[in-house]
Image (cartoon, rainbow, N blue to C red; front, side, top):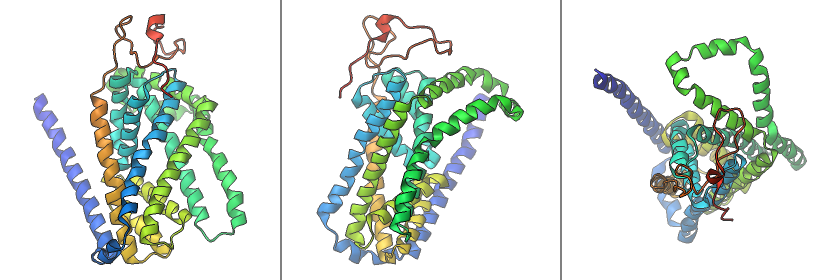
Length: 370
């Protein structure tokens, strides 16, 4: 009976996945057909092979600021993991965030934290939630900033608008703590919680409470906020430079702010669409904005094809390799304390989560690797 029930559930899920990919590929086909993809051969012939070889290198370089940013997050919780382990998990998280439908691949990242770094699952969930929520907020700020600088507005207005948008980087903190303070005074929150099945609440209630506590510690750290914002803006800048270098070969008239705006807006549309790889949605927005900025149909189609082949494909391959290497890692067992990882230091106790205090031998950790 159990096996039959599981099969009955997996059947509709498989059909939904197939339908989702079918819609995505049909959408992508319509976009490429409307941009006359058969005319891109002339554009491809004149491209510099050296530039095309350099573009995927930027995808690999992104791993460094991604790992440093993730290290800042786990350090705020008292852990000191190895930089290499974080590099693999961080790169996988970034790749799956843009490639899987609605960033659904992120669900595996807390498990990787637990397997490779001995970070408890609730803490890993909090790390992923903080990174995703804050990075999406900063993504929206950068997208708005790029669209403003790519617009025909006077430069004086652009300069005035920039500090206001950058100041909005602190908005997620304000929103989080506002919700935390007013939630107990909202009676409908309790009614909403009762809609969750009791078995689910009993099974995962402690996990959510511990994750909420870790999330509160992350949102309380101003030092982490500053580091996270600066590193995130650096990541978005590298992404913009990568796409601009590609666009300069295809359509030199497209400026850096315009290329940056195209990249951020199209990636955002792909994530919001929920389609696999953002197929169709990313490409439609990219083509539409490139046309607005003066690119021809052939140049727009070339940009879509090379964006998929030289940026998305290498990122996906390296993300898959990072995942395969990360799942092979295991948190080394300390000889003094059998359950503690020698690559991380558990956070201090006494925060009210009910987690027992750890002995001094369990608090030992590997020093930062720079």
